[in-house]
Structures are given as structure tokens and as C-alpha cells.
Length: 165
Image (cartoon, rainbow, N blue to C red; front, side, top):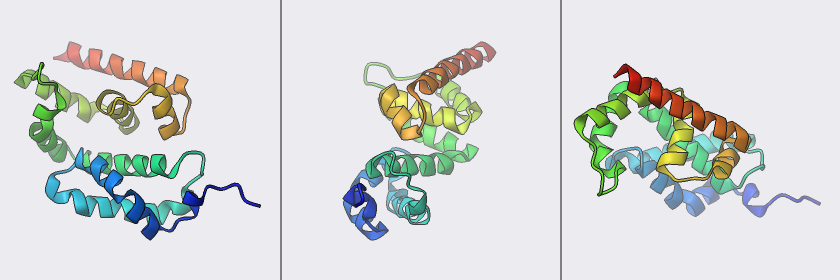
């Protein structure tokens, strides 16, 4: 008798029907509106290729969310793409009470370029998505202690970057 969740037995077509909207919302946080649909399809193509890697130690939603985030971060790693995205989305990254000046936007863009991919992912999960350390740990497949350490690393990176300005 198997103890696997029924959702882990779904094929990619079923996953697409069930989770497309959630993945598209995630993708829309990173890519221009005109590219959301095709990028969402790309995420599900990656899911199809990687379905055998799904370890069942997290939910399917968490796994797809992580695939979508990683896919979008890879897409955004190109320096030109990052700069364009930051300029395009900077106004929506800040609350109405605090609009960044040009120097702040440049600082965040340059900092983003300097971070290793895992640290950037953790930073997005924590500071942009508002996930807890426990949620990030589950999503990243590591301990909360590791996430706490990496967030301190991120703070140091920000401080070092600030001191070079």
C-alpha cells in the first residue's frame, strides 16, 4: 500500500490544469505581461522534465512554486534583463509611503547583480514574498538555521555594497 499523496501521481497535463494560475501569478512577478503565458508554459515544460526529481518531501504546490521562481530568476540573471526589469518594476516594489530615489534604484540593481543565485532567491522569498524562515527552509529544502544564516549573509552583503557606494 502506498502512502503517496494523490497529487504526486498527477501527470503534467493535470498539474497544468490545476496549478497554471498559481504559477502564472508567480511568473508575472518577474517577467513582462506579454511573456507571462509563454514563461508559464516553460515552467511546466521544466516540470515535465523534472517530475522524476520530485522528492515528495514538500507539496506539489511548493515544488512548482520553487520551479517557477528558479526559472524566472534564471531568466532575469542576464544583466540587461535585470536592469530593464528593475527600472520597469521599481515603482511597484516599494510601498506608497516610500518611493525610492534614483540612487536607491541603482543600488538595488547593482546589489542584485552581485548576489549569488541562492542568496537572491532567499532574499526574494523573505523580503518580496514575505515568506517566513520556516516556509523558505521548506521551499529551499534546508534548515531554518541555514536560512537565518543566509539572511545574515544578505544583510552583510547589503552593508558591504553600501560601504562601496
